[in-house]
Amino acid sequence: MNQRPSFDDGVQLCLARDARYPKEAYPLIRDALDHAQKLVAARDKRRGVGHLDGPEILEGFRDLALTQFGPLARIVLETWGLHATIDVGHIVFNLIEADVFSKSDRDQLADFDNVFDFTEAFDAPYRPLPAAAERDPVR
Picture 1 (cartoon, rainbow, N blue to C red):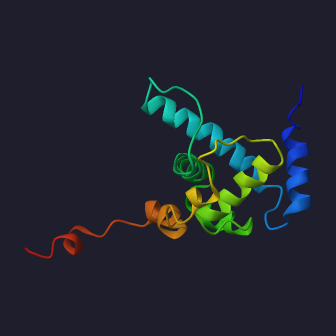
Picture 2: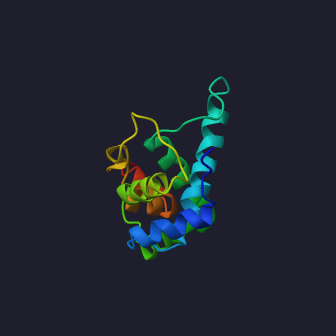
């Protein structure tokens, strides 16, 4: 029986193969996958916890990053080389290649390409709302 490597061993393998992302980024992606499974299970009780597609993983990633890092989320992510949704996909697929995560035959890296804009996703929730007079110029 083929046993999967531990998460830490898998990350070390990923880092040896692809130095674009630091080791600190990998636990966030693992936690985002877990978070995404909880979000999907809560939204669709019949579906339960199971395989997620790229946009579902990214939904969990965005929600978790905003929760953990608040208004600094984009800055923290960028220090780890995460500038766009495709970067999350690269880490997910690095973990797949290291046999830490699994994938279906339908999963592909393109599922993570340009799903949302990082600036909009991580900055917009913290922008001040316009004053009432600016929102409704008719008096």
